[in-house]
Length: 299
Image 1 (cartoon, rainbow, N blue to C red):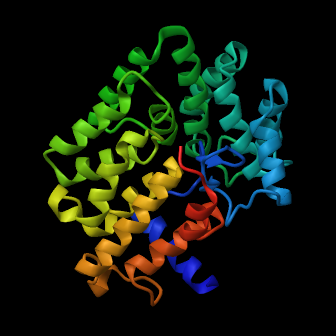
Image 2: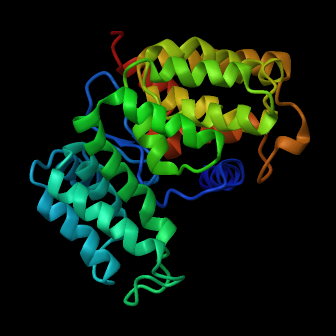
């Protein structure tokens, strides 16, 4: 199992082209939803790590969350804790700390290749997405979802967006999920079909379940290279409801029966695509799909 999980992590790095180094998708202890973390390996509710994450995600005071990040960039803190803290800070929409995030973003634009002398391995791009999310969440509170949606969608076409933009996009109402799904369907290039599919994996809107399941079963029919269909799997896991996980399980059965991913070039670490994707469930949620489906109640 350990070898299988390692193989899956390699595959995710190749497909996504990024590490979980900024604003993070993490969920634990939410009724009716599976635990999920792109930051922790096999996070399980009730573990010490999960308890720590839960405490941060329930924080109501922004100051300690910001200070967690400051300690980390000064070489004295834990990076995972800082990332979860910044994720929660974005959710709180604090005016003062949105201003602080905006100032730090401006500083990073001109800070050079080593902006944090006490942690020279930390780059501006490691922190910028989280800061961007904090700024955008405050904009949502002030200007509304439609303004933020228009801003992000405009920057997608010019490829000037990051993980923080995607995280906020996935939280927007105002038809954001429908807008991204529509753009995915009509995208004229493979690159943008993959980009929009990846963005769909940040939403928790149950309306996306049928689309994501169809993409997983027949990626060719959507013009998506098979190796990138894992984004549909990620999306169903992030939705995290019993219905979405059952849809993923059924889609996986259909894909195996039809040989969708039988091409040996899709294998990694000695395991085929579907075996690696199955291992991703353990890595991201801490349990097998069948266990989650049994434990979660229908809405």
